[in-house]
Each structure stands twice: as structure tokens, then as C-alpha cells.
Image 1 (cartoon, rainbow, N blue to C red):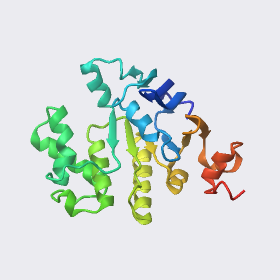
Image 2: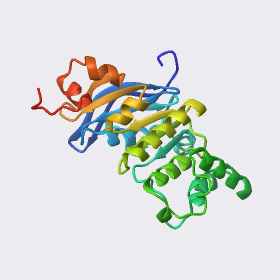
Image 3: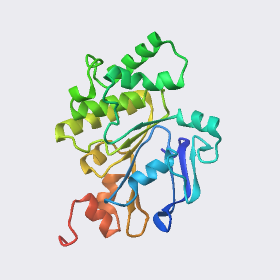
Image 4: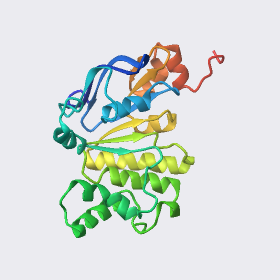
Amino acid sequence: MEDKKPIIKVENFTAAFGDNVVIDNISFDVYEGERFIVLGGSGCGKSVLMKHIIGLYKPASGRILIDGDDIHLADEEQQLEILKKIGVAYQSGALFGSMTVLENVRLPLEEFTDLSPQFAEEVARMKINLVGLTGSEHKLPSEISGGMKKRVAVARAMILDPKILFFDEPGAGLDPITSVELDDLILNLSENLNITFVVVTHELMSIYKIANRVIMLDKRVKKIVAEGDPHDLKDNSDNPWVKQFFNRESETSN
């Protein structure tokens, strides 16, 4: 991946809320077309990091570049253009319960483009088809399964044709079969659309299946303690805690 351009650059980044430092001075790049996983134990700051990258929180120090632009220094108009390069599928799906699948997916087109209603609907149907939900357009979120809600969230995240898709715990709350199907969807979209994926998760089976590269955060030191191919880290990391994590070992098993 190093022969490709970094599409995300995180430089000397610190996340803090008041005096509480969550992540302390980390740097890394994410490359175009990469499936990049942010992982670590509970409370290590995975979701906090993602929320900073997509502009919801401002770094305590350091900077974050999206396709060369600093989202936190941009004015309102520039921020909007940067955010159009980003799609986010949240853990819960974050669908509007009173809106159909089609209406949920179409909504960003209505908010951020001048497309005609007819063309916006056609584009939304295409995205719904891409995630395998053709036939569910007129169902409400309450009428579909948890796995289908996640797919709707993915379709909506893709509706503006972003360069980067962020996933926050995509497999959370799903049964193993549905979780595997979601992993397959991520792989298929990655291979066919050349989208960069940034996935926050601690699900080892998903990590091994979809990741090109991972970084691992540790809340005890508030830094990155591992970076690379997850299979290599499983077998060859010189950090005992990293090996425990990737091999699903307790601290008392060695």
C-alpha cells in the first residue's frame, strides 16, 4: 500500500477531554484503497479517534488531513466539500424510524445536491441494490433485521460516492452468519469500487478476514502499540499483550 497516496494523515495527534487524555501523540497514514482497521480493548479510544477524523471532535494537538485538507482548519464551505469525501456507517445504523429504506438512503442527496427527485431515487435504488437489499425499498427500519439495517446504513454512507467509508463496530449485535455476510459486503465493495475503508472493531474474525493493515491502541499507554498485518502480529509481535489479544489468551494463560 505504501506505493499509493495517503488519503488520511494523522500527525502527532492527541485526543483529550479536559485533563483526561485518551490518546497521546500518535501518527499514522491510511492509503487509498486500503482496508484499514483500528482495534484495541474496550476504552482505548477507537471510536474517539474515528470521531476526530470525521470532524466531530477537535484534536487537543496535532492535525488530521483528509485527502490533503485539514478538516479542523477549513471554513464551513470547505468542510462541507471535505465531508462529501466521507461516508459513515454507525454501529446502530442511525436510521430514521419514520422513513422507509429508500427515503433513508436518498436523504443525503436531498440535503446536499440539486438532483431531481426522480434521479435521486434512481441513484438511491442503485446503492440499495449494491448492498443486496433490492425489494426492501419501502420497508421501515422496524420491519427489517439488524443486519439489513447495517446494509441500509452502508448504502446511505455511499450515496454521495465518497472516497472513504468509515464503519464503527460493523459486527456489533449481529449473529455470526450475518456478521460474515457484512464482511463479505465490505470486501466486495472494496474490490469493485476502490473505496478506502476505515473500520473500528475488536472482532478478531472480521479483522483477519478484511484487514490489509491494522493499528492497535492500548488505553494503558494511550498510544499505538502495534501496526501491520494482523496475521503477522498474531505470530510475531514482541509485545505480550498484543499477542494475547490476537491469540485470544487471558493474562493468566501464559
